[in-house]
Every structure is written in C-alpha cells, then in structure tokens.
Amino acid sequence: MHLRISMLCAMDVGEAAGALAAIFAELYLRLYQRIDPRVWRPSQEALLVLQHLASTGPLTVTEAARHLDRSQAAVSELITRLVRRGLLAKMADERDRRRHLVWLTDEGLELLRRTHQVLSLELVEAALGRMTSRERGELIQHLRTLLEATGCEPGIQP
Image (tube, rainbow, N blue to C red; front, side):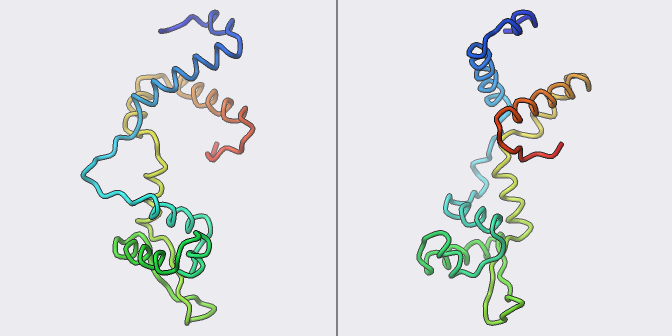
C-alpha cells in the first residue's frame, strides 16, 4: 500500500482525492472511538438541547422551547431529566429572580466534548508514538494545510 513519493507527486487531483479518501476511511476504521454499549448515552433530542445551550448560553425553559420549536412541556420534562442526570443545572436569573435559567454543568460540557470526539485519543496516541517527532510535526502541518484548503475556519488551535 505504500507508494513512492515520486508516484504520489505524479498523481492528478482526482487520483490524490481517491487516495486520500481511501486512507481516511482506513484510518477511521482503525482509530475511531469505541463506545461501551453498557454506558448510558443521551438521546438525540437531549444532545440537541445540550448543544443548543452550549452555543446560546443559559436560557429559560420557555426560551429553550421556542428556540427548539418544541412544546414547553416536552422541553421542561427533558430538562428535568437532564438536571437529574447532573448534566444541567437550574439557577435564578440575576436580573429577575422570578425567572430560572438552565445551563450546562461541568458534566454536561464533558459529555458534549466526548460526544464530539470521533477518534480514540488512546489509539491515536499509540500510533503517533510509533512515529518520530519530525514525522508527527509534518503530519499535523499537512493536515492543517488540508483543513485550510477547505476554505472553512478551522475549529482547532495552532
């Protein structure tokens, strides 16, 4: 499967795209984060609420229901379950003590982080440990170059 550098440089864009897609698929199969089926996972709707709060900041149940286009009763019930699980907390609005806001707890933020983590850090670390520091640096730089070439703002820090 290893191609010589001269062969790689001779590829046209279509061939390079096919090679990258094949390599990416293989990397994903080898490095994806396996999820223990015995561990509780939130529903898609619960994740939607957590992600929405993470992007908007604290909201009242009414505001969350309006933003999510769900009934207030359904959102209130879901938020109550997430509070019981320790993923959300209710707090009084400092500007109006009659209003209560819901916000992510540290556990809720950690759950979102783990949910968005596609690759197993342990498997990636093991693979990177088999490379020289120069190879690791070049790999990261080339992946950043590819990410920048998409024209989208990357979500990682340099």
